[in-house]
Image (cartoon, rainbow, N blue to C red; front, side, top):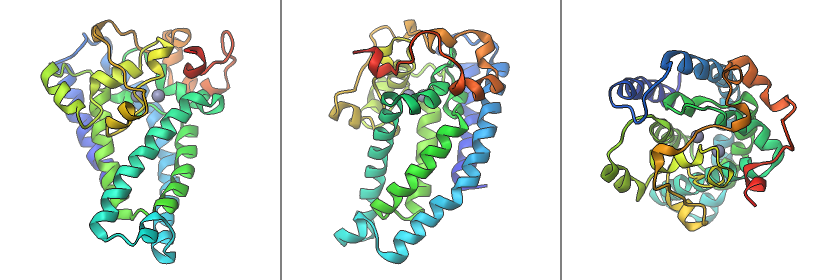
Length: 266
Ligand SMILES: [Zn+2]
Ligand SMILES: [Zn+2]
């Protein structure tokens, strides 16, 4: 088991306990909700494990052949580490945005957005197809950046902590959330991203750093975050939340025209 997976599982356990103690919203059937999300996450974890060697291969190929931005610029170890960490997060922003703007990618990514009760387990609710496409695209980006395996593991370890935190249903004090928001994506931003209002879903694409959304005009907050309704209206029903149904969701006929949140908000 990789170090980022171990960190993720420990953090998930801690956050799930905190959500029971200090919930931002009263929890419903937390265990059933979590088990369903983790059921889908198990299928995605298999794809993640099968594609992990490809990511390792990309970093080794880059190091051995000198391919990639880092090698081309002749930066030292520290410069290279910092540059690839920040640029990989920019890539995550761009990939997430593409998942909202391209209909084929949205069919897969909407599985993440159909959760009507967001909590830390939602951070792992991704369709295996999205994990596969993301891993293949990541290989190309790792080669283009010349990112080392060590930096990739460090990025993924930090990323899993941030995404578990910003999906969590913890009642984070406003002052703390605001301070964190200066650097990372906190719950106040990502809860807006999970709103069932298309214009809000179409905002706050950041993964780790919050400044990409400010830079590219997709930053958005709600004055009344407690009133945000999570999910996608057409798929809010309980039956849509079963793991096997979620696996089939990308192929399901859609009620009404298939529109990405980006198209719907225009
Ligand atoms: Zn999204
Ligand atoms: Zn999310």
